[in-house]
Length: 329
Image (cartoon, rainbow, N blue to C red):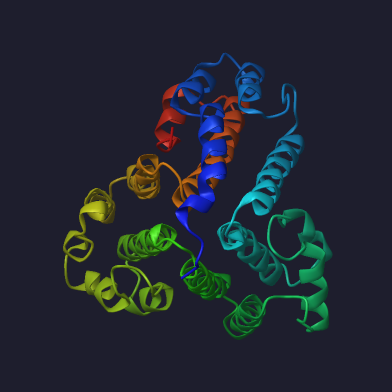
């Protein structure tokens, strides 16, 4: 564990609390949902520090969201007493890029689908992939990409390649967050693994897939062991995922297995992760405040993108509300 103390976060926590009111919370999201059109919804985002996106094309939207994500990660990398917190957030983009790279077989056109928010620049990954020289790529990521590439070549199944990358991602996350001065982030990651495994279990059961696929998909490191997850083939999902935090998700998952729409289940899975973050509201200062805030910044980009694209596509407000997840603020 890190020797950094919670008091080392006093300045940064105060800084974050002063900025939380600018987050895209439930009130502003509702304004966007109720907006008459795309441009009116986009104007709401300017209150949260987004650029003026009225009249923006889809390409400009994606560019603006990528710029915002990169800006806050760069800013907090400079301010955070434990740089590993920001590094852990960057891991997701490394492994997203790895999936794009492997499934696109390293094609140069794939760079436009990759994110610049990871630890490794997309072009560096592409060059390493082509040359099969990985000195510029973190060892765990490089090994995962090589293994995924071999899996795809052997099976022609991109889903299996993705599963291997997901396992590597969560393993690296657990190792990294385990070095922090708090177990809060590790708890969040473990819960994320549980949610990922519950989703895999529900989809396998719903699709009448055999146990072997779930055995391949299940990710170790969660609060529910891989062996326990596999029990869903003989026991109700609600019995396997019975922890209080997951109870609602499991119940909705069981309904989905029986044919109910997946939307409510998927939303509950996302919301349980947000609920974990709300514990940071009771912390005056410390790394928990940073973790929750960075996760909230990522969530607001996801929500803003969903609403704006929905407005452009003429999606009804009630349908948009059904798709939105709970907000941290």
